Image (cartoon, rainbow, N blue to C red; front, side, top):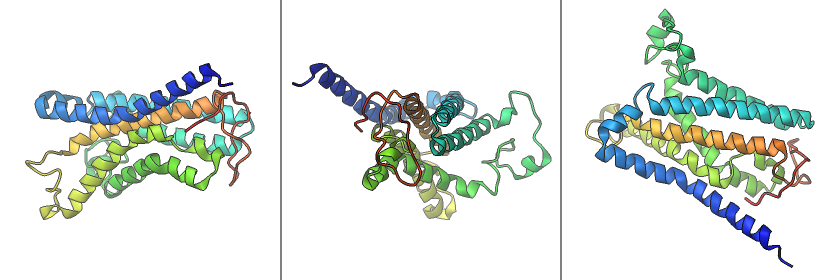
Length: 262
């Protein structure tokens, strides 16, 4: 006999996941609308130290905290490989948070050292804006976004259920798409634009400008936040991943209550 309550719950979960998947595309369309018809408002929210950057920083901080909690819980379960991976993710996002707030430079009124004044493209205390790092920054965003977009598919093709927790699920993958698109376009414009200045996409008179990346980066930070919450739920035992299939020394928590249906 079919359990109607379970069927209804499963349907609600599917609808919820589809909605989560569609939200980033709706935000992009809304962002285009604001840019086209309320350019002054758009300029304010994407400005340096503007609302978008502040929200990004907060989301990266929360994501780092969630990943560290997941790491601690996996460690207590004896799942050291999982704990190690989420610990690395936590430290990485903590670093990004520190970069987003320029290591507290404007908060604590810190002066920019001579080295950063000379070598930082924005004259601030950040590593990612150093002249030696900048050429690789767009490529880094592209690769990270690709991992967020296609990680779940690679796990599915590999057929290793216990690796599911190490990649954002399909319904979270859409949150990484805008960053991939905008940075791919900016990188393409840089290499193919007339005069090498990015005229194809981000030059004068073009629709895209380099500050447009803030909307994509905001959704990227939201994608990491949602992924961190998913990892914390796994570590807390709220969801179940089949424990029998494992390879490469990546086990998952044994304590669980509900089967994943991604």
